[in-house]
Length: 112
Image (cartoon, rainbow, N blue to C red; front, top):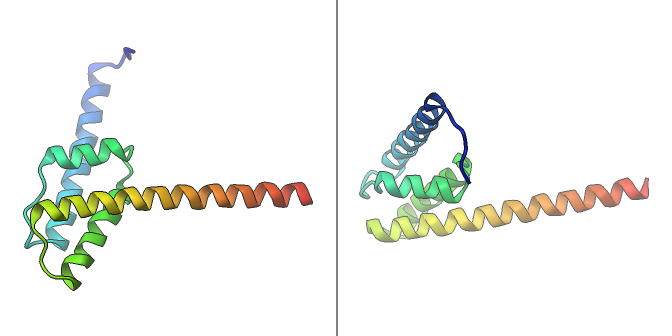
């Protein structure tokens, strides 16, 4: 499926992606300074998997920082895998919570 994006629109998408990656890299450096920074490709993959949802990725990085602090130093590979797992879990839990809220709201509307 082809889209008819202009060169400017394509360029804007890449600039936004770079901004997201730069922000996530800075967050990783701030929270996990002792662990090697993941590659830009890893950050781009996380963004793609999670539909550019910065909050999901931030959650995974934050949870990894907590684990690193309380359970001892993680190696870079384990940190990336743990962060990915936290992102996936957070996204599933958030979706489940949203579905529950919608079900409760529709039940409440029907009862009224």
